[in-house]
Image 1: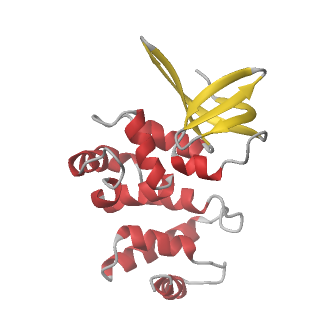
Image 2 (image 1 turned 60 degrees about the horizontal axis):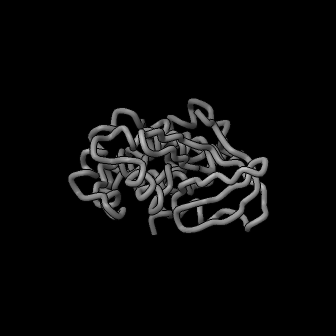
Length: 203
């Protein structure tokens, strides 16, 4: 219903933002991760929103990026996880970290969120694993880095090969993805060179 709101920050708490849009104050539920990076009161911000409409409530949930909003929408499709639970998960990990955990089957990391038990975390992984691919995760993780956002198909293939090699060496898929994400890669590198650099990120 409401794609985003843009206005002045009136107040911020750990889980709620009040934003003034044309002299109307909107309450927007947010994760603590969002609360921690918002600018101060009086600043103008743009928040991407998800609208929850019930018989007795009309609630906005806010995110700083479309990527975070899309991940939130995926999480609330899981049986047993509502908007509150989805925000709890995104309060302890970024959208990228959640993708890594889903691909790696890391229910322990997800269940650290308040109100999310081990069984619920396992259900989330089972339900969303087919909706989150390794290539998409890697693409999302480097999209903010201009120097890497124009990867060729060959570069993406090498990164996938390096991740698979790290997993074969005994590292978790989560750690492997994070290591490749942190590795600075140039056009003249081959898979072996990228692997050596990625291994250095493990220590």
